[in-house]
Length: 125
Ligand code: 5GP
Image 1 (cartoon, helix red, strand yellow):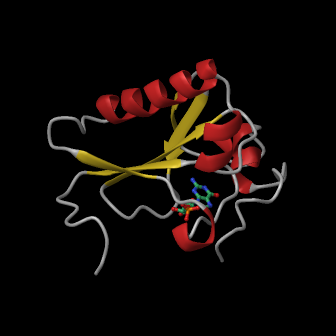
Image 2 (tube, helix red, strand yellow):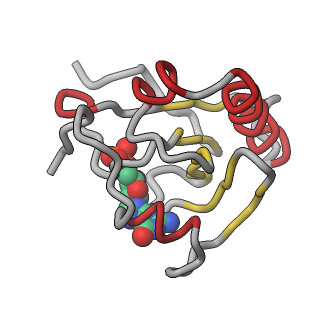
């Protein structure tokens, strides 16, 4: 079920628990601003998730409230993870789902990195 991205941050969400190390994940990168790990149900040969360390429900929440260092750190981390995964030359896709129409399921901002095959057109028509 998609979440309501206007609700306050919920510290029990699954990605908050992954950040705290309470549940396992296959981590590929971590720095002061971001954590990256493999999606549990990959939809492409490479399917990584990058999340900010701060308590942000969605891209909207992050864009409105994060400070400049958090935003720069997070954006750089997404680029670094994709680069380290070897995705720059063949190309890749970033995706952030927000709220109901975006079909966001986990209420902690995450950017999907998809790659490793031809991903086709942007959205099903
Ligand atoms: P959303 O629809 O919110 O953009 O995407 C949520 C993503 O989180 C999905 O691709 C789903 O497979 C992934 N996911 C959900 N629970 C877990 C989990 O416990 N561990 C990991 N690694 N990924 C998860």
